Image (cartoon, rainbow, N blue to C red):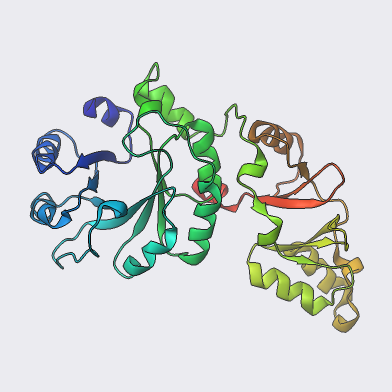
Length: 316
């Protein structure tokens, strides 16, 4: 199996270890014929007994399951592995705070740990976004229920690494399955509303906002735009960095006179919250301009959220 995974160029070999020191014998054996980095996931209430093996094998990545820990981790300084903390869906991600100075990543367990072939828990989409906002310099790994459509959404959210077991090994061919995990050409029934940035997470101004308020809104959220809504929440348009730039060129010398109506794009491309990922991709392919974000509205044009594509472009 390892040789077959190597042949299709996986990035890591993820090794789950349920409190068994013999895992290091497996790692040593794998290392005799594979150079692929090893990602060791330790599930144990006595993690300290694994420290010597980690040092001896110089394991590339090591993740500790938070829920099994009886006390805070104190790792020896000579462990050079990249370190991660794994949490299940019910555990708040804020537990990572105690490890943020020494740990490189978090691993979200998005199905029931230990059960192969589970379904991805969609509650984790928002949890991942919130973690990314609080710990922007930390990598995000996801394990559990990762299919091609889930992998696409996670890539779009800026997730750095996904663990796939059942999807890969139960497929007709590993190479084909791995290609699908990395592909944008997918058939998806996941709704945009499951993973979009919600309206509570969006920069928004009213049509009466000053030019300074528009700039402050764009700057605060760092998404490259702000949305404009009326007092009922209906989308009036979008103001992007490009719209601001055009407004500056047109009104240079009289900046205090610039109003929302001078810089708003009143007809942005948008999509319904009920649309699936597949429908969204078909829509994007059907329009000529390159877009970095897509407002999401309901049937009455009330703003529901937005999908951004910055992370997906970086990933590709």
